[in-house]
Image 1 (cartoon, rainbow, N blue to C red):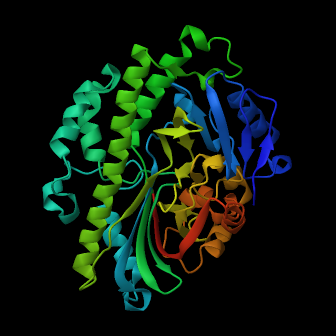
Image 2 (cartoon, helix red, strand yellow):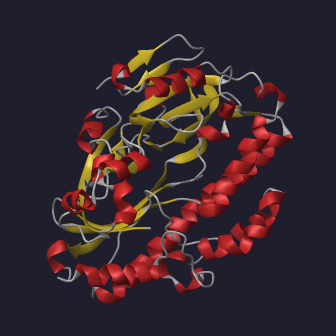
Image 3 (cartoon, rainbow, N blue to C red):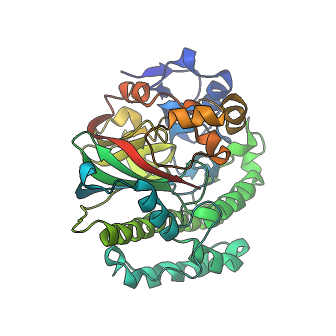
Length: 395
């Protein structure tokens, strides 16, 4: 589809969703953003839904300013996918056994490693600048300085909520590994700290929503935020890389002869320095991926409705972006009240995964239809592969 443009604010809102079908409180959030004096433009993805301050599923380009809430509290949250040499018919019949081995290697929920993962012991992680990365911890906001030990043992862990680790097969039967996670507790603490700092700044006192508080260029607060933000984005990227290396290590031990292609990785809660309309801007993607021309991305549905590997079309009207997934259509509390365990088992039939009440809020029925989301953004991405879940691990 082509986008719908909504005017009336300081900056245009370009929507890859039908405005009449978007909830009123979501439209209110979008209008609040578009009316900020620093905003160059807003692109709205087809999976858009309500978020703190800024909607999830929006791309905001600002001139020399950034709103921490327009990034999200899980800084650097994103996806990684790896294509393997195996086919689904070569996998063992007992996928439950393989799931248990993966769950043992990658802690989920509030779990963490007993000791930090040594990257030199994993084939994919050698020579990745780890010492320099951890040295940067000492320059972060003083409020998190005592969290290094926790950050170290959480490196290479999945977390909970909508984070997942999956073994999938594409339509040709080729096996892929896909995972979704972010910067864990350290990223959230940094986000919360900077959102609170921004809320107290004088230029943010008259905003329509104080959760949209911004940092502006040339200030010490902006400098401190950018330093912590980019470190947390790197933590998230490395966290996914460690998990993928641990998974590959497990699969090498249990699937003889398996090999892996180069990973595809993309953030979907982050900030990037980019240029549009001959203007240098800071682009925040909150629940959106970068989809520059020829760039690979990953767009998941829910835990039983498949995932798409895509290639960007480089649509500048969308600030070279696309959706990050199907997006929720109901809150977690509503999902728990709406669906039963029997519903969950029926909707995840054929997928090796947890089948208990602790994950009902992640039931496929709580998410928007991924096929409709993909149909709404054919001018943003082209589909490279469609994956279906065989094993799904959640916290």
